[in-house]
Length: 158
Image (cartoon, rainbow, N blue to C red; front, side):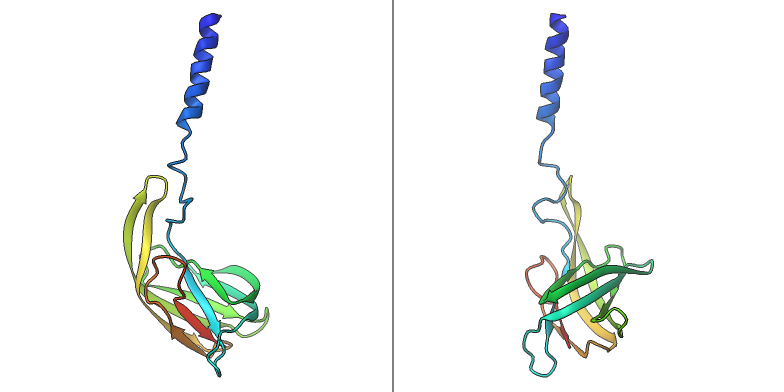
């Protein structure tokens, strides 16, 4: 019985020690970054707060609604992680209102991060085109690469 308790104690301590935090999945933000989109007034060019914004993205198998947000100055949108050279993003300011379609073109680069996080995708040579222009009137490019989520990559002019 004495050996059984000792064996049970050793197994329990072994399980506690083996649970390390080093392989947790992308806790410190080294995963694939999202695209940051900000808003401007088309007439004045000044920053704009959009009272409501509905965003949908086509990830290759149809549109996926990312939901509604209110009082936005910017929005982070994940792009496609497959080998497609573009992502189609749809914007509306009202639930039943007109929908603008923006196609974001890019090239990608893969970087190995860690066993827990896997591969990080970086987006380079960003360019955007406004396919359907209502309610978004124009686009203005920001930073043309996505390596983190700090800087704005695209401005939508309403």
